[in-house]
Length: 405
Image 1 (cartoon, rainbow, N blue to C red):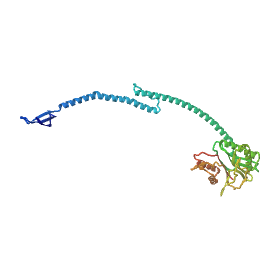
Image 2 (image 1 turned 90 degrees about the vertical axis):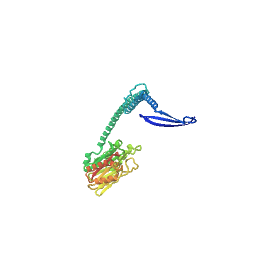
Image 3 (image 1 turned 45 degrees about the vertical axis):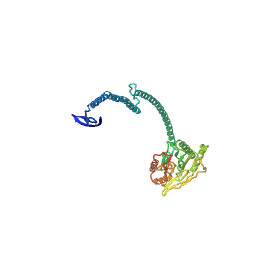
C-alpha cells in the first residue's frame, strides 16, 4: 500500500538546453521488499519550443499574407479619400479669393465624387449669379455716370449763371478807380462767403467842384449767396434812386427813403428783408463828415485810442422800430482812421476753441495796425481771418473799409 508520495524538480543545462529532472519518491507500506521507490522523469521542453515556433511562423504568415496587404489597402483607400477632400479645401479657398473658374475633377461614383459634382454645380451657379450681378452693376454704373454728367452739366450752367451774376454785382460795387479818385488813402477787404455776396460796398458823388459830396456805404443785406446778392442789387438800386434821382443829400434821409421803398415793395406780407449798414458822406469842400448807421457802428481810431461811434439799433427795412434815422457828424483830426465794417469778421468761428472772433479783439487789432499803410492793413486782416478760421467753414460775408482822414 502506497503510504506517502514526495516530488522534487531539479533543472540543469545541457548543450544550451534546459533539462528538467523530476524526482518522485514513493513510500510503500506493508511490503517485505522495499520501503520506498524513487522515479526520475527527465524533460527538455523541446516539444513546447517546436509548438511555439510553429505558432509564430503561422502568425508571420498571417501578417505577411493578410494583415500587411490589408494595412496597405487601408492606407491606399485613405489617401484616395483624403486627396479629393484636400483638393476640395484648396479649391474652396481659391474661390473664396474670387477665382470662380476653379473646378474639381470628378472620378468614380463615390460619395466624394457626388460631393465634388455638387460643389462644381454650386460654383457654376455662383459664377452665373456673379456675372448677372456684374452686368447689373455695369448697367447701374453707366446710369449713374449719365446722371452725374447731367448733374455736372446743370451745375456748370448754374455756376456760370452765378458767375455772370457776380459780374453784374461787382459792376455795381464801388469801382477801384473811383475810390482812388475820391479817397487818398483807403483799403477795402471784401471776402464773400459764396461766389456772390449779400454784403456790398457802394459809392457815389454829387454836386460840382465847389459843392461836391462823396458817399460811401458798407452794408450787409439779409442773407448771403444768391438771395443776399439779389437783395444787395435791390438795395444798391434804391440808394442810387435816393441820391442820384431824388437828390437826397443827408445820409439819414437817404436811409429813411430806402427803408420805405423796401417796405412798400417787398415787405407787404411781413418779410423783414433789407440791410444793416453805414452810409458816410464826405463834403469834399468843407471836409466835414456825416453819417447814418443802421445797427452797424463806425469805428474811428485816434492817436489816444479808438472810439465806437453811435448807431441806430434798427435795420433799413421792416423792423420793430420805425422812427427816423439819426444824422451824426464826426469830429476828426488829420491822420485819424475811420473803419466801416459788417458783422461777418467778428462773427467768424475759429481759433483753438472754435469760438467767435468778436468785436473787441477786432477793434483792438484795427487800432494797432492803423499806423500801417492801407494795403498792409488789408493783407494783415486777410491773413488773420484765414488763420483764425482754420479748417472751419466761413459763416458769413466779410467786409471792412478803412479810410485815413
